[in-house]
Length: 133
Length: 118
Image (cartoon, rainbow over all chains, first blue to last red; front, top):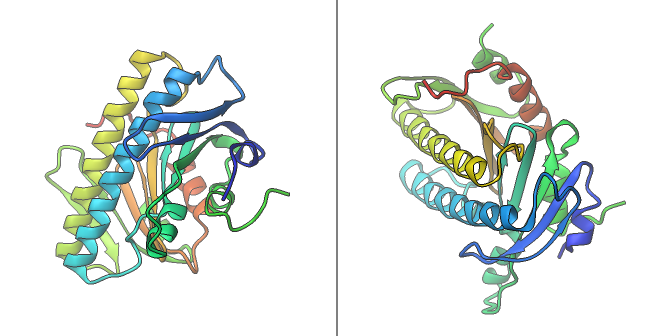
């Protein structure tokens, strides 16, 4: 599982954070506090939790209606803002649910500057597939 | 060529389309039925309106944080990804598509899209 410090080593990382499924911010690393501070990150975490839930509902409904598979469960939700993007992942939690684990880790997210953002690298790190070089 | 045509020419793009922010029209090309494309456009529009509301809220809370106006969003599933920038959506096959390339192309192409959601 990725750590916040690993996420901060992604290209253009501005902040990394852990949050509950209900949105509360649990821990964070912030590189540019003049742009994103702890209270901003708390609102952002709540937004991300809400968007993950809505996307999960939509993916579930889409698969039922269309019989297309491969959308649910949502692995990552990314909000692309004007200057930066935030990527959040529930991948590890879904893996643990499939293993019948009842104690689940928090959700994790990273804020990346758009110009150098590598979304696929962020997905891979959040999913614990590869370490940061 | 339109952005939808350009997107469909890229590897791994299953379908792409556009929707009106006011919700009364959509168009699409690719491997979806008309009814499924209609549903996809409605879901994409709803999420776009939601993230724009969230961006405005964050802007009031912390002006010039860099989120507002949101450009789009991406939902990444195990096999498929949905990318939306402004009022354009596309569905990607993860095994064949580059999400970085598609997001970069859409961001660049839609850079001057109006953000007033009209």
